[in-house]
Length: 412
Image 1 (cartoon, rainbow, N blue to C red):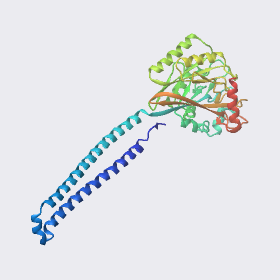
Image 2 (cartoon, rainbow, N blue to C red):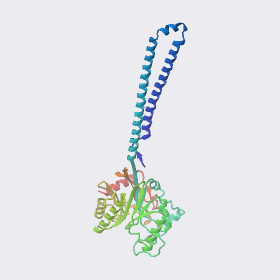
Image 3 (tube, helix red, strand yellow):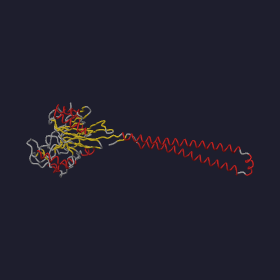
Image 4 (cartoon, rainbow, N blue to C red):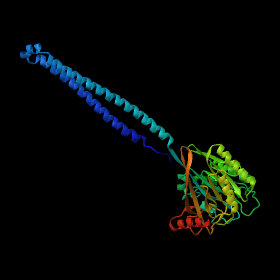
């Protein structure tokens, strides 16, 4: 939302009102001047023809009327001089008004404020592991909801609609491939499920995680193709998401962060530098890292996060632990170590259903980032407590406060 620091219309209205009043005063003086001139001429004429009995006396005594006419001429000259002064003053004020209006227009041009709002949530696992029982699964819920693509993000869509960019971690494949990787959990969803993301008003997803290749190269290629066809951005590894919001460029990167290495640090730094060179005013980096079901970040996450901020990133986000972790402010920048699960088809009824949405605002003046502010919106991954119905929902009241306190305690 763009705000103006000066009310130009109001100032012009006040100055114009003053100017009109002064113009009316000048017009009054001019009317008075013409009236006086007419009166003098009428009176002079009456003296000559008004009284025939005194014609001879007037003819022999002409000096006194001459004095009266001279005085009248002096009065007229004084009035004309005053009128000219008033007209000059009026011209001066008009010029001053023009200068003032130009100054106000200049001030309007430089006092432009805007806020870019980013919403971020955690793991979005559409579909299921085919080894899971169908009943109670994500696919079963989709069928039970009459294949309603809008069902899953319905309770959070209002939040996502209000921001400029919504990002999540897409921890599944969108593919019809049948050959899977040899691993414990392998998630798959029909490519049509991309409409769930689109219906949720999500602009971009991270593909840097340990499930992107669950169905090998075909699964990976199919996933990117489905995202492209739905016009949903993605980032991770060599892929970068760059977009422009009201003239301000935003760049987003994604990586896994299982260990600290100098090679990866150099890759991160070069990528951030590259985004800056392309004109990005905001750089966000999302990592897939940490230890599953651990509520606190550890040294590897912290080392990489601090390095990323030191290298020029404005916001660092994390996923993978499947639970919420601590939130840190480092050198004025926010680090969210784990956003937890969000719309998570990987478990029918997890014991910990706590989740969150980070709403982060970047405030700009004249195109320059001046301040930042964050809000955490506590959520549950389900709108019911008894099971996972895969419909993330904001929490209220005591439950909301409990999750906020939990996040704070995770950092102690």
